[in-house]
Length: 101
Image (cartoon, rainbow, N blue to C red; front, side):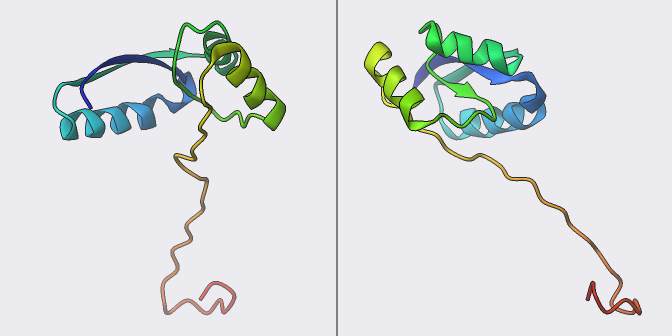
């Protein structure tokens, strides 16, 4: 795909979104993604005001909210998990703790 799009993203995701955009633009010549980093509530307002076509946030819309967006803005709502939280525990194999091995 080619062209330019402006999106809203929760400001706490800036490091992740910057990297995602860098990789996407390097793999898709002619693509430019402009990001407006804002508090999550402002990102959602942008979507409802139809001033933005894509939002990156932690909000998971309910079915009634999806239906309202589809009815009022005439767009299809697609939600996709970009990342999940995780904890990594690294233990030396010689550790006497049998619960972590």
